[in-house]
Structure formats: structure tokens, C-alpha cells
Length: 240
Image (tube, rainbow, N blue to C red; front, side, top):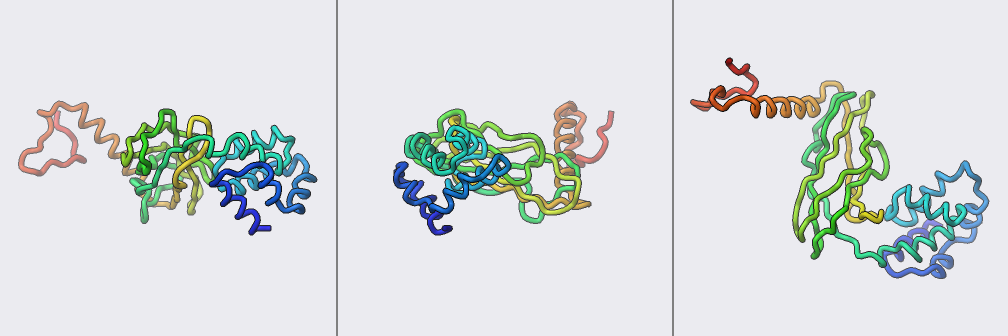
């Protein structure tokens, strides 16, 4: 059964019509999902998303399942009939690096912080307007579901930031994000936020302090800042 699911997912990268999908579906799997009740909808959403290789977010899976009366076989066929990426030229995106919350960095519990990733347009065409970075699963760290992303020229690089809030309990948490077109199709590398929450973590506090210092320095006249001699201390009080 797992082999057939993987084959369906691989074929999803090519033109795949309803008949091929039906042929590849295991009869026992189809019958099992046909017999499922309302309480199993979350399972069906997860299974459809897995079969599609996370190409569609949970909301999109819910749409196709609902329009086919929660029949997994028909929902899978409907997706490839009407919403296959073959019918829409998807942009290309590669993850470059973590700008914040990198290896070894930790955040205190119950603390606001900003997570920033660096991404690149890895394709040969400019990104169309309206793309966003979208939360698709795992720990969310706040209420932000998506942030708009600037259009990038081929090989262009930009930083994408999301305002987040760490959980109250120490531990290691992780969430998944992906780029999304205006029509709801996901593309590019999976983007992860792996958060180490521990008492004594400094990242959130450091970010807040840096922001406060930047605002304070911008508000003060340049003549009030003693920067001569290379001994300027940004933590010192500014003389009146």
C-alpha cells in the first residue's frame, strides 16, 4: 500500500488523469476511506495531503474532499483534473539559510521574537505578484498564518520575517512553512522553524534590546552621541 501511495505522489509531478489515479489507488484503502464517518475528516485531510506530497495545504484538501462528499478517491482525481501544478506554471524557490533562530540559538519561554529566513528565486523567471509564505503545519508560535513576499528576479535573494511568540513550556518545537501562490498552490522548498525554548535563552531579549537601541539612537541628535575615539558604548545613558 505504501509503495502505491509513493508512486501516486511521484506521478503527481507529471500529467496524471483521473483514470490513472483510480488505477493506482489500493481498493482496500479506497473502501476504508469510503466507510469513514465525520469524526475521521482530519485523518482524510492528512492522508490526501500526504498523497499529494504537501502540494496542497489542509484548507485546500478540505475543499476538494468537501466538493466530492469526502471521498478520497474522487478528491484525489478532482485535484489532478482541475488544480494540478501542470496547469499553472509554478515559481521556483530555494531556501538559503536561517538568519535568526539558527543552530545553538535559544529563546526564553513566553517571549516575542522575529524569525527570519533567507530565500532565493531559483528559477529563470521573475516571481509574479501576490505570493506569500504560509504556515502549513506543526507549531505555529503565534497567530500569523501568512506573510506577503516581495517579487524576486531570477537568482534574486530576500529575507522573509514572521513575528512569533515562544511557548510557555521549555522544550524543542518545530513548525513548517511554504511559499504559496495567490491561487493557493504551494511551491519551493519546505521552510522549517525549529525552536529551542529554554530559561535563560537570549535571542528574544537581544532582538528587543536591539530594536529599542535603534529607536533611541534614531531619536537622539547626532551631536549628543559621543563616538569620538572609538569608545562609543551603545548601552551607556545619553548625556542631556
